[in-house]
Length: 397
Image (tube, rainbow, N blue to C red; front, top):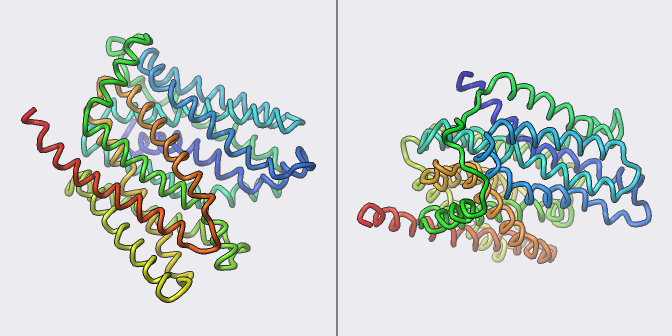
């Protein structure tokens, strides 16, 4: 398998999560009308149940791949994902759909988490960061097209057609994986699935200061992204009166922001991961502070200013999250599967816990959103500067 094909395959595996979340957005009103008409406010549980399953699966898929091989776990996860999608497609009750979505999330964690371990098996350092940055582009591309794709599918085959699309997507990706990608973790390098070894690996990760710092900063960067995703629709609707064109603006900004991943791939080898992350966070601090000051001084900032700020939040994600993953994974090559699981699970769960209460602070202004991102970016920037000091001390230790 050549490098271009490898990147495309890993990107498709990575996209499983984003596609499973964003393509469901247009289906929520239809599901509520058919399965829970007495309480349509329950429909968003379709989203959170999937995330819950993904969080559960993230903790286990990495260690399982260390013990039984990367392909075995990825194929098994895809199989569970397909079965769960079929259950949801055939279900007639809302509760069964929720249970199926939890299983679907557990299954989707296999391709998502283990793909990072596969990349670490084959690459390291800045070259790994280059590969991951291209793959991370999916996080800015898929949210731009998935809601529109979901809308088209619903228009032609109803909300159940979304689950059929999930099945087709997963079957294509797993067949591609099965026929084209060799196993990247030889048997002699596998780690038995023992609690003592697992806890030892976790202790080793969190004992490493650079790994520890990179996980905290990644949590903050993901919290910024999650906070924007939670509050962006109310901002568009209640402040800028653009609810009807929301999906066009959201998709367009997401697609434009995807340039960050290409830019990162070009710059990371020259500038280094830590320096690029620090620069991206510094720009976020300055930009958020400027928008806050403008908003407080002149009243509600124009939509153009807000859209520019939103675009940079997505842009920043492309310059930081993949590089932070690479920094955390670099010293953990011998336990790559476990490391990928812990990094993904901890940063995602903590980011969701941070973003959820912030989402409740919406007061009809952009102040809570911009202020929260400013505070998190400032803390992340300070931690990245401190990481530089820690790295300088490590050789002497």
